[in-house]
Each structure stands twice: as structure tokens, then as C-alpha cells.
Amino acid sequence: MPDLEKVLDAYEAALNEPRPELRAGLAAQALSDDVRFIAAHVPDGPPLDRQGFVDDCGVVQGWRPPGARLRRHGGVDAHHGWIRFAWEVSGPDGEPIEVNGVRVEGIDVAELAPDGRLATVVMFHGLTPPDTAE
Image (tube, rainbow, N blue to C red):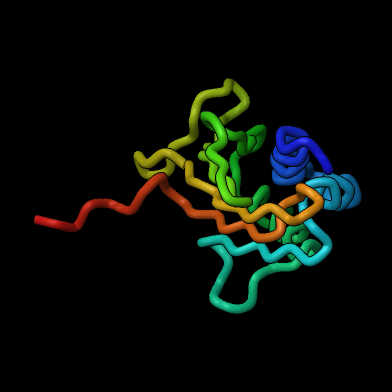
């Protein structure tokens, strides 16, 4: 079984790798063969499979400023075969990126496959939704 830290390092590296063939290899290390990837920026429809994840990473990288990288931010919370962790997008200087005054950050929640890779990944943009209570 792969070490969780290595799985998450490969996942993060895949999200940032510009070369599709290397991104696919990293995704294979991090994501199960039958992964379901669900992200807020992906239109309604079925979850992405591993190749869909690889393709989507390339699209998302095109939206980022040059040199920007997604990186885990903080620790990993794990229980009952599920994990969650925060992430942010930072510029080449390591400083978080803001769009219209809002930091580009979020939380991923993932189910672990029996082999230790990620079986289901749900990517949320933003740490929590704004409070609408008055």
C-alpha cells in the first residue's frame, strides 16, 4: 500500500505538471484505476475518470498566471477511509494568488481505495461558502 504522503505528493505534482505524459504517470500513482474526480469548476455531468483528470489539469493550468502552482496548505485530516486537506494557488514567489480580491484556495475531500490511492476526490473551491444568515 502506498504511503498517504507519497500519494498526495503525486496528486499535487499531477495538478501542476505541464507535460501530459508525465501528468498521466503521476495521476496513476495518486488515483485508483476507477477514480471519480468531481470539481466545482467542471460542468454538471458524470465525474471525471483518471484520463479526464489528466486532461482537466492541463485546462486549469492554462487559467493560472505563469509560474503559479497549486499546493497543499496545512495538514491532512483522516478517518474511516476518508481524508480532507486544504490547498491554495500561489505565484512563483510563493505568495497566495488573489482574483478580484479573493484568494484562490479550496478543500479536497477524498475516499481512499483499498490500495491507498485516491478512489473519489471532491474538490471544493473556497474554504467554506460565505455566511448568508442575517
